[in-house]
Structure formats: structure tokens, C-alpha cells
Amino acid sequence: MPASIVVGLQWGDEGKGKTTDFLAEQVAMVVRYQGGDNAGHTVVKGDEVLKLHLVPSGVLYPHITSVIGNGVVVNPETLIGELDMLMSRGIDVSRVRVSRAAHVIMPYHVALDRANEARLDGAKVGTTGRGIGPTYGDRAWRVGLRMEDLLDKAVLRTRLARLLPDKNLLLGSMGAEPFEVEALVEKAAGWGVRLADHLDDTTWLVQAALARGEHVLLEGAQGTLLDLDHGSYPFVTSSNAVAGGATTGGGIGPLQVDEVMGVMKAYATRVGSGPFPTELLDEIGEGIRERGHEVGTTTGRPRRVGWFDAVPIRYAVAVNSVSSIMLNKLDILSGLESIPLCVAYEVDGARVERWPSSAEVLGRAKPVYEWFDGWAEPIHDVRSLAGLPENARRYVTAVEELAGVPIVLVSVGPERTQTIERAWRPMRRRQAAGLV
Ligand code: IMP
Image (tube, rainbow, N blue to C red; front, top):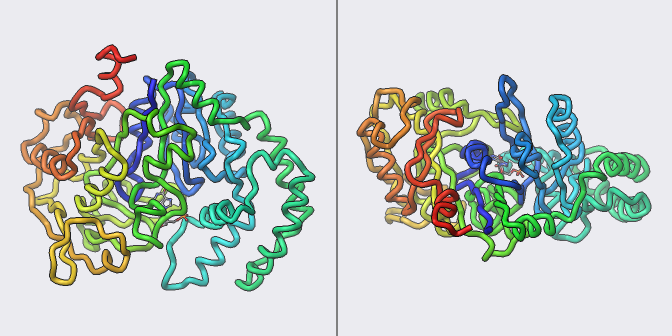
């Protein structure tokens, strides 16, 4: 059975957690393929609200194996904290498998990230301060530590003795404290002991599941517009959030994927710095932020809020080969008098319909809007497209036409049941068609 990918089409926080949760019953394995504890999702189990940054939310389902793939950067302290928290709530974590090849976020990566942001002043990327960039940087520079290295004290000592003088020099130049080899060796080896039972060759795990005919879901963190290659560089994260990242970071080949579900909200949000052409700096934006609870799960920062922007969506649909879309948080727009949709930009007097790769160009882009009448009714209880107020239906149809891909799921509230299934769920259709 082929694999499916769930990918964010905006600047992250599109509600991918709800999508995965909604699809979970049909899935045997959920694989995180990039990012680290910069991501965050809130999952609800009965009366309990759990905040997870690393462990895929599939862990809450006894039938799902949760995999942290080789493309993820792992802060072992965060991971151990999450495993302990889950265990204390009676959740079985033995099915959490972590790639031996995933890179380790070390304390000096976190210190470098924070010290660097502090000195950037007005040019800050606005990172989450979790050491993501420095860890991926070391990976590319071939001086990183991988999870399997935590199992061998001798390897740790040799590598850290070689690395730390450079790290300390850089940290010192930014006024930050140095690290000591032996203390770090002990700490890292301790993590290794605690996590040894979770480490695995996850590529083979994924491949074996596919060979057995099981359904594997690959889950991206962040979103396409924060992708290292496709976002508005340098205001991006340091990994490939796009669907292609699932192949390198999740251990599958391109032809093993038959479904890419793009996830987007009915409006846009962004955390951190960088251009945001449809940003709302008024009380309408404030209202959406409040109603939509738009506060960063990891940093607690209020998210920047704006109107839906179709220009990057067309791009995101193309670079991810999106085959279906889940539209989230339509209910948050209820009560607005009119709703603009950004269909193009005006840049230096010219109309631009293609997402510009340059942050400078994007910074000069002015949105060209098409206006839609709003709807007053709450829509939490609506379960079919026909049941939506006419203006809400028009808005969804317009967004779908601009995206050029069927919107198959529309979320009208935070609960799993508050979802409109507009078409066959693609994964179900495959079963119905007898293709499995
Ligand atoms: P980093 O990933 O911490 O290096 O941050 C780089 C950029 O990505 C910053 O603008 C962050 O706010 C943003 N970012 C990272 N992770 C997330 C996320 O999960 N949701 C939204 N924005 C994120």
C-alpha cells in the first residue's frame, strides 16, 4: 500500500494535527519527517490537553506506531520529557521509534541559536530559539551528532573534544557561556541510556510496513512557506517542510506516495519575522487572533494574522503535488461583514500572480483583493457543504478554484466531529475502489 503525506500549505500552524487525528483510524504508522521541537501541537485526550513538540500525535492511538524519522532534529531532553509525560498519563510509548540517523540538538546549538538571534537585532528571523538552524547547519557541515552516537561514550568524547573549541569560540564572541567536554559527554550518554530502546533503523520500519500493506502517513511540520528552499528565505526554517522532505526525511521513495493532502486555514497566520503581504494590523486581525486562539504552541508568541493569500497557495499546490486539501478553521470567519481574498500582488506597479522567491520582492508586494460577503451564522454544527450559509459556500468554492485542487475536508470547529466531509476521503476511496 502506498504512503500518504500531510503537508502545510502556509506558514505552519494550519491545523495539521487535526488532519492527522481525523485520518488516524485508517493508518498504521505516522512518521514525522523534518523539523524538531520548534513545532508543537495540542492534542485532546478525553478531558486532558496534551502539548507535544516531537512525538507524533499518533501515539495516542494504540494501533499506531509513531516514528521520528531521520530528517528530524531531536532534542533528547524534550523527547524524554514528552515520553515521561505520556507514560505518566498511562499512554504506551513503546511504539515510539526514533531514527538512529536523526541529528541531535545539543545544548550548544540552542545557545548559538539564541545568541545569534540576539545579535541580529532588527534583522532577526524570529526563530523559536530551539537550536534548529545550528543543528541542521552542523548536519550539512558533517560535524553533527546522530542519535546512535549517544550510545557510545568514546565516540561522544572524541567528537565533542574536536567540536567544542570551535563552538565555544563562537559562543564567546557573542558573549555566551562555553561548554565543557566531559560534562556534555556524561549528559549525552545519559540520554543514550534512556532512549536506547526507542532507537531504530526507521527507514526499514517504514519500508516493512509498506511491504505488509499497511497505510503509512508522513506528517510534515511547519509549512511550505517556511521551507528552506521554497519559502521567503532567509525568513524560513532550516529544513524541507514540503512533501519532498518526506522522501529524504521519512525513508520512502517518490513512487511510494499516492496521496498528498495539503492543509490550510481559511485565513493566514505567521509566527516570526518576514514579509506577510495580507497581514492585518487592525481590530479585525485581533478578533481573528482571539477567536482562532492564534498563539504559538512552542513560544507562546501571538501569531501574526492576515487574509487568505492564494498567490503562495498555487505555488504550494504545485511544489507539493497536492492531490486534496483540508481547509481548517472556516468557523473563525463567521460574523465578518466582508472577507477579502488575495488573488494577486501589485509589485512596483505591475500585477504579479506568481509567488516571488525573493523576500525583498515579497516585502514590496501589495495584495490585490477580491471581496466576498461574509456570513453571520455560527457554522460549528454544519456537516455538509450544502448546509453552510450561501456566502460561506461561495468563499470555499472561490478558495478551491484558486487552489485548483479539490477541498475534501472542511473543519468547522476544533473537535474531530466538527468536520465536513465534502467528498470521499481519498484514502477510503482507494479501499472502495478495490485497489488495496
Ligand atoms: P526556527 O525553525 O526555530 O529556526 O525558526 C525559523 C522560522 O520558522 C521562524 O519564523 C519561526 O517562527 C518559524 N517556525 C518554526 N517552527 C514553526 C511552527 O511550528 N509554526 C510556525 N512557525 C514556525
